[in-house]
Image (cartoon, rainbow, N blue to C red; front, side, top):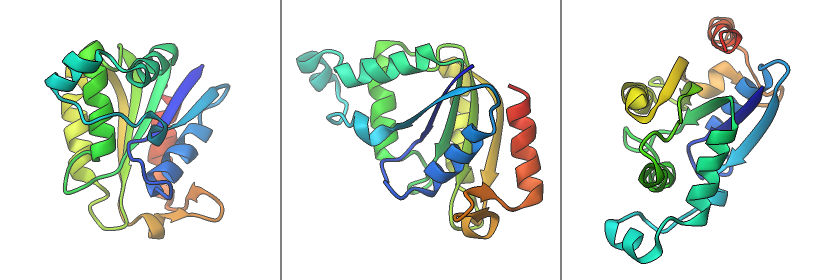
Length: 173
């Protein structure tokens, strides 16, 4: 099984990157491609830029990575209640290649934050929009209070209830 995993942020110290790395490590018999979306930074999308540039190669490359995967695991950072600008921009460019960005692949959506909301607002947005972008949502999990529930030294969830839920989602793939 080929797994594409990424944090939907360009923050190099992202707690969402830590969470998605842990989740991807739970997939048995998998080849995991852990991607940093910072490597896919593009000009801010607009119709004018699209007319000028066409489809940027980086957008095509990321879209192809999704196409090559069997499973996509995303952990969403939340900026002001919604997607990070870095993720939203990459997503917008890919949606111009094909609105079915997730190409009917199995997806797992995660989100975390240092506070009690666990980035639940952005996770809810992603879940709601999943069918419109051809994502076969297999499960989702919000991890609140990241530093209370995740051990950054051992790189795993220490909250047994959250860990159990995540393992059940991964087992369902």
